[in-house]
Image: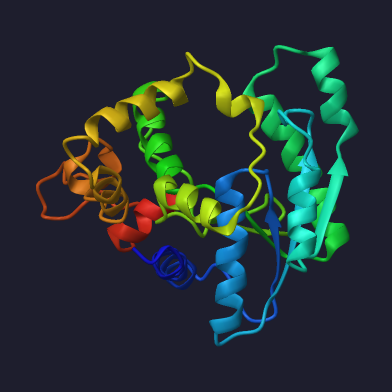
Length: 266
C-alpha cells in the first residue's frame, strides 16, 4: 500500500467534504508528540502543495506535564523539516498536577482548550487542527451511546464558542493503523502521553473490543463511519423525528432535510 497516497486521499476527502480549510486560512496544527498529530501535520503539508487554494500552516505543542519523555526530539525533527513550530509550557496545567493529581480528562481538556486558544491568537491562526482519527470517532460514538445515552460523536468541523476559531479534524477517515505505519515511514520520533497508557478506562475497553471484533470484521470502523453519515432519523426513538400522527411526515421542528437536522443535533 502507498501510505502517503492513501492518507492524502482520505484527508483530502474530509477537508473537501466538510469545507475544513478555505482560501486565506492560517491553520495551527496541534502536535501532541504522537503518531496521529505527526500524520496530520504531514498530510496538511502535502495538501497545501496540491490544493487550489492558498493557506498557511504552523504547528504548536502545549506542555501540560503529561509527556512520558522530553518533547525536544519532536521539536528538532520539526525544525529539520522547516516547520513553524511553537512550544509552550502551560503553567496552570502544570500547577494542576500538584493541586489535583487525580483530576480527570475533562479538567485537563478544559485547561488545554484555554491554552490552545490563547496560543492560536498569538500565532494569528483562525483554524485549529486536531489529530483525532477514525478510531477516535468510532470510540466516541460507542462511548456516548453506551455511557451517556446520546447518539453523538466528535464533530469533524465545529467552531469555538465565540466563533473565533474553526476547529477541524482532517483525519476522520484515517485509521490508526495507517498513522502508525506512516509515522514510522517518516522516521518521526514519537513521544507518548501518560494518559494514553492508562488501563482500566472506558477508552481502553472500547479499543480492546474493536481489536477483537476486527479480527473477524476488518472493515468495522469504515462501516461505522459510513453509518455516521447516513442517519435514518425515522428509525430511532427521538420523537422529534417520528411520524406520531400518521400524516406521512416527521415531527420536524426545523422544517429542513433530516440529514441537516442530524448534523445540527449531533
